[in-house]
Image (cartoon, rainbow, N blue to C red):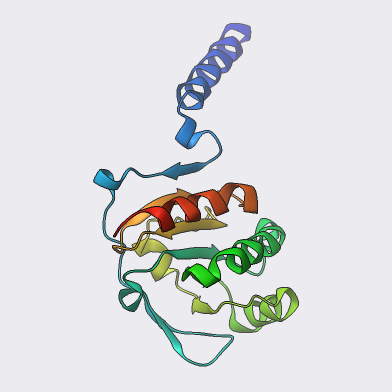
Length: 178
């Protein structure tokens, strides 16, 4: 039994070390080189907290930050002010933010928005079909993806974000040509 425990521990350390040498994955985030980027899936949905709708295809030429969240997600609540800081700092440069509420009921989602008061819109995705299109598993929220000016996925962050992590990614993408 003792040797089995040691073997499992060694395997765990080995597997953890495999990923820790890759800086782009060290914190659960990955910036994708321009040559490796793929087109973001289509997103067309009505805003749940404001009037109007969001269509990702209409955002070509802009950097878009897509944040997947749920009302029951404590890290989502914690990161909300950080997302708002990045939005406030980059909005004048034409950056677009959209929240995607997943696996939730409308009333708790609306209460969450009323509490955190984001200045950008969120869409309702109770079946998580938009999340699935972006390859965001249900147990992987919060998750934030950044879309470049050409409509391609340029960064994937599968953890709670803060301004220090997200804003440099957004600014780097703003500096790129489409």
